[in-house]
Length: 189
Image (tube, rainbow, N blue to C red; front, side, top):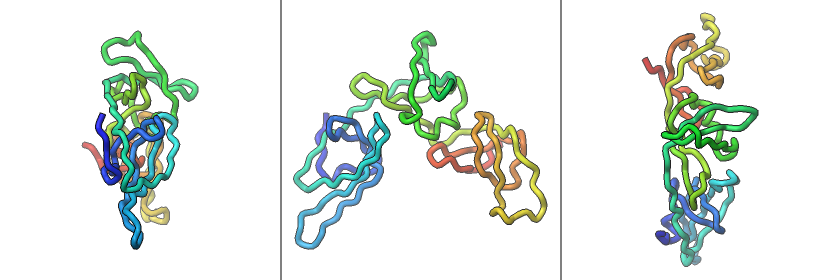
């Protein structure tokens, strides 16, 4: 268990705040006139998904959250429940809520291996790959000269998710998607 100084809580760091694990989403160290420096942070609770803002003073110390990862297999979604199993033992199944997973889960295919984040021997979330490749199942044809909508059209991917993509993307092609933003990145042929 590492103890961090106030200025070591940087973007992407996992800390324990009020007994719960948090991920630092934003951090800005500054000094207001004659006062001591502070680190203004935006933190996301890894268990509940709530986002809070907190300023750490120069005398504050925090504990770094010790998160373990374990490879698990995404099985299916049923009535808003997301089911997973251990990589080597399909009988050991468990479900997670959408709040713990985020919107990026809609881009993950069934039977895909992902990393489960574990805090104090309890699974608190899933670490998704930043980019995934998915096949386009539905794409309306592009109409020549139809650039009034910013030259984008809505396409449906093999997972059922819909995104906006350029007009030249056709049904049957494979595209690369950013799971964090939900945006089209490029063709993946």
